[in-house]
Image 1 (cartoon, rainbow, N blue to C red):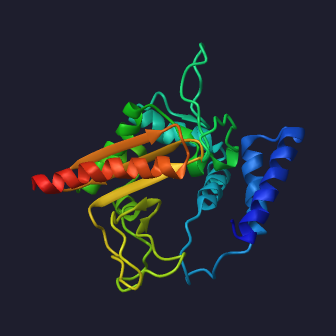
Image 2: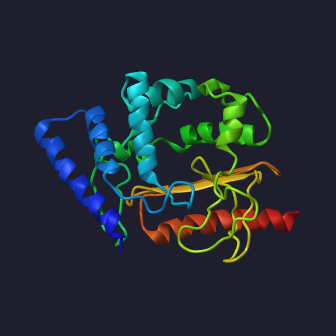
Length: 266
């Protein structure tokens, strides 16, 4: 079950969805309203005293970017990411159906078809889509940076120091931070995870770049995962039109099989 603080936020999200439908709020207005709702939530721990994975944090950042740039987040991402990389299929929300009603339908944890649209304030958290080809353009850019190409992210306006920051773990915060409890460090680097095999409880985490970046994301109806390794260079993408925990596990096992085969070859 979800903690009470998350249940309360979910209820406020549903009220906000209903209000947006009645009032006709724009995406920008909805994100600003979500930020105000989030400000009323209780933090899981005091700042600097623990780690908690937060999709809502990306929603807040997208709202902040809109205030700074005076443009909708969707326009910013298209202009500054998708267009420079040539990601012509990039879009927001669940993948669209074609004219003949073809295309992938999302499935929930129970395996049932679920055509629910994602809430616009979650676009920055887990609700974008593209073809595998276009997704690979994004992945290759990060793999080049991971392998030491300081100018790899320049095409999207990110300098060498910022690129390094994106790939360096901020959790754990220091080398000897231990792996304990539900809010343990996750070797997270601005959204990326940097350690494929987690240490067991009571063991220290690495607080440095590992040469590995990966992440699994879901909107609970689709799953997607990316794995990058600097040496030997390796890029893998997996995706499924099921948001179930079993689908995520299948994706990880598929990546694990390729990683394991590479170790045997070595």
